[in-house]
Length: 444
Image 1: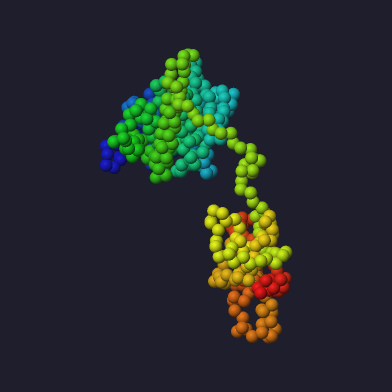
Image 2: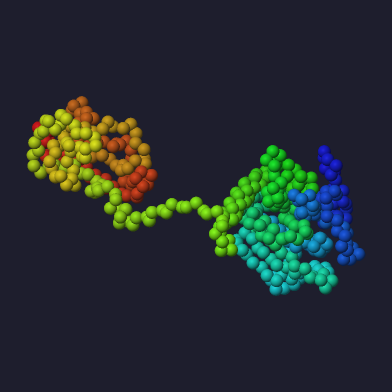
């Protein structure tokens, strides 16, 4: 007896029916169970672990069933034949995690298999994608044959959800296309017939509400839909993840329907039957032809090499007090007037100010991602200090002729990819170097 409600599962708990249940805690409610009336032998009973679920039109739209056992395969085909099922949706594999989840109730391709009085022949098997297997079956009973289409979804883990909702929605779309206008119920099963089966029934139920425009924004609730399913099939939508998956898939489904509606509205504005009586489409602005690579390069600002090396001018420059006193407007500036770059087409015409350059203050720490990282070369003052020829107190951080990057960082010669984005090796300096003699002459 189900707590807090009038639902019962007495028939499924009978001693003669216990062995027909795959799981002892998943029993169909007596109020919604499928009653088998087709008798094929004297030993047949009316019990099968399957439940009717109402659809959006309040009819028996679905049959939620457990995957058949080896002892219930005949009962499974009795149910299909009795209710003239045309489409089966199988949401599990036969074996999952090393355990048997469903008995194979079909035959190999172009072969037939007998299940009691039923003969099943698989005419064709196709795989439209890696997630779905489509089997076209022909079932024969007492000289009468019927066509049944089975859709098996392969990418749905037990007690879990698929990676994306699009695959399940495609599965349902194919099943609806095969079902067409046939009034027979859609047979949905997994292993227990509750978790994955409940999700599929819920999504198809929501789809019917959308296409029939029965959804009211004030009272539409996915929770209420799941509760309705659970009153008809125990443990329908079994886990929290499966419940959340319904929301994700419902959003994806709504987006698809809106896109399809927009496409239909667009096509309805096009001329039909050769008549130009439809509303014209708004004119579209013709996009300009993209420029070629050479033209795009020619449109870039003219630049010389991207490196600039400070060098000694070839001729002694002349001071220009008037030029240094009045700075040109920002719009007319090109290069700083007091620097000379060896790739400057203007030549060595500006005064050098190397004597005014001072090394930056020594940083406290340096990230390992900075580039380059190596032991900085030291000036001749360092060498004199080490040899005892120059007192250490006369040396200051501003006397360096080379900028000290990070003496505290270990010696690394590989540029980090997180720095400039390239793998490059910088050779370690071989030792202290004296500054060029020409630099000191410029300071006078």
